Every structure is written in structure tokens, then in C-alpha cells.
Amino acid sequence: KAGVTQTPRYLIKTRGQQVTLSCSPISGHRSVSWYQQTPGQGLQFLFEYFSETQRNKGNFPGRFSGRQFSNSRSEMNVSTLELGDSALYLCASSSGQGATEAFFGQGTRLTVV
Amino acid sequence: QQPVQSPQAVILREGEDAVINCSSSKALYSVHWYRQKHGEAPVFLMILLKGGEQKGHEKISASFNEKKQQSSLYLTASQLSYSGTYFCGTEKRVSGGTSYGKLTFGQGTILTVHP
Image 1 (cartoon, rainbow over the protein chains, first blue to last red):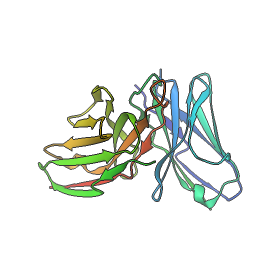
Image 2: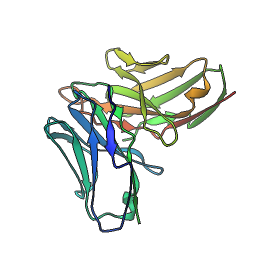
Image 3: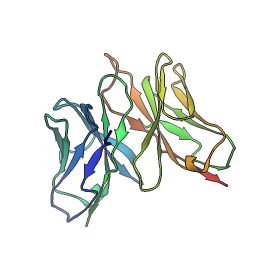
């Protein structure tokens, strides 16, 4: 069974640019959650999608947005990048039915210069 | 509000035991435990639900005290492969049950196992 796939693995962007990250969940999983991981703030929840609908959202500015497609693949977009957006972005895949185990992808390491 | 993990770091020799604690000020629906090695994704270890149900994949045990909103992860007979940062992720209790995939993670406990 294939795991969670995130692309790209590494990105370097300039301040002010925008970026799109992709996450393909485990086959059959309908929920995708996104997290930002930094040394200072740890793992922080961005948002969760289930069957193309955002069900939950964290405390991030509107520059962070996401969407989910009918095949459960999800994308996350960050506009007007700031230096502080440099982080490891992780997505987690689960069935989305009740409290179930979530499986993380390898992450996308974003560096903003 | 972020759950508090203790200790922040622990050093063991192979074969020794360790306990990692996770405390929350919120009423919880579930507690999830993950281990992350440097440069890798967090790996699922255990989920504990209110009511006592547990789901896990490894020889690791855990407990969840609903009254105190505390969970403990028990690592027995530690192996070198247990080294890494352990995170608890808590799911707040809301009307209707789960808060839909929103885990609030603790700051992590760094576990180092030496030969």
C-alpha cells in the first residue's frame, strides 16, 4: 500500500512569491490535514479537508489556503511569501471517519529567501 | 492551547524503560502519539480514545486518564531504534465528537537511546 506522497520535497522561493504544495493521500483515505513544522513553534495545524470540503482551520493568515480534489489529492497555497514561512510543511492522511490514526508524508521543505 | 509534554528530553541505555507524559488543559476526545526521527516524517504509534479504546502498531503501550486529561506513553526495554522526538497530539472534545483531524501537538520529548 503506497504511503502519503508530497511534492516537491524541497523548494526555494523569494519573498513576495507564491507557492503551491501537493499531497496525495493513501488510497481510500478521504481526509487530508496540513501542518507547518518549525523549530520555534513546533507542529501547527493549518487546515483539514474531507471530500473536497474544508472542515477545520487553524490560526494562520488568509495567505495560506488549500483545496482538495475529487480524487482526495490536496494542494496548499501560500501567497505573498514571507521569510517566516520557511518551514517543513507536512500533510497527514486518514480515513476522516471519527478519531483515527493519521499517516504523515515526508513533507515539503520550503525556504523563503 | 498546546499540551505540555514532560520530560523535555531523556537519555537511556538499551534495555531501560521510559515514560513520557502529555497534559492538556482542555477536555479531550483523543490523544495521538507519534515519533519523528531527524529529517523524517512523524510516524504514528498509538491513538487513545476517551472511553478507553486504543489503537497501536508497535510494542508500545500508553494510558489516557480522562479525568485529568493526561496521557502517558510507556517505552519498555528500549532499543536504539526508539531514539527520536516523541510528540503527543490532542484532539479536543467538541459537540458531535471529533474535531475533524485537528491535532494540537506538544513541544516534543527528545529520546536518546545509547548502546
